[in-house]
Length: 142
Ligand code: ADP
Ligand code: MG
Image (cartoon, rainbow, N blue to C red):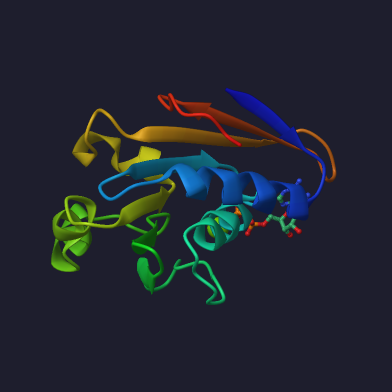
């Protein structure tokens, strides 16, 4: 599924709709260049899970944890250069735990991700235009 958005708000709205479809154990591998809108999409997803905290990029902390209808584990693995760092913070307990995991830059650790993850690829296609491609996601956005 491919979606075009024309503002950060529209991207958050798509995130909201994605969030509404998510269930415990879902893992999203979220990729796209810097500024593509990954974190904005996560803001919307969080809202869809009834999380009202301010969602910030976990670039330095690797993972931020939020509690909504179900837990949300928001990773940014951009700066990871040693998988050991990930195991140390309990990566596997998170992704095989009972929340939803979203991994920004997950392609850089694809080898250790399960095969059935939802893939989201974001692209800058204009100043405020973004393409959001969702793969392995057989659900309806309503
Ligand atoms: P990433 O996490 O991919 O680096 P962010 O969500 O942090 O991206 O930032 C995206 C930037 O692009 C923000 O400054 C946002 O205001 C801007 N932007 C412009 N148009 C859009 C859009 N359609 N969707 C999402 N962000 C957009
Ligand atoms: Mg980000």
